[in-house]
Length: 142
Ligand code: TYD
Image (cartoon, rainbow, N blue to C red):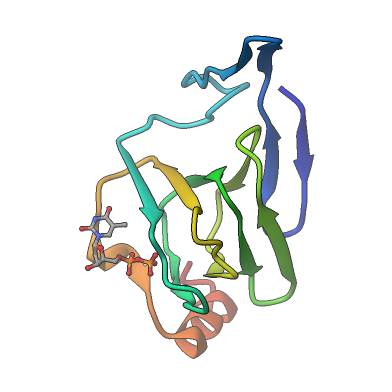
């Protein structure tokens, strides 16, 4: 599986089994595909036009974000670099393997954003204050 390493994330290009019948993507939990044990799957949909979500970073959680349908933008900020990715196809994922501040926006009406995660929902793993996120990064606490 091809990967593109960026400053704040890695793009995982999935292998498509395609033909005139349509397309199929299978994701297996192995280092060359989804590089962590998947403990949780969730999806975000029916987001009102103009709404922005996220506004947090995770201390430890690893995730892969996939735009299953429609489109949305995700802004990723590691405290030094800001990058924007448009999630508009189901054949690639954005792998977040380090603490990054994320905001999702420009949701189309039909957007379904799928997230694979390596751990359960743990509120203590969230950093919801951007200034605190920057400080924790500077102090080497994340
Ligand atoms: P939140 O993480 O704040 O969503 P976003 O970052 O996309 O804005 O979660 C929204 C709500 O859903 C919040 O009440 C917590 C709940 N939630 C769960 O119960 N389990 C989960 O796995 C997630 C991600 C959220």
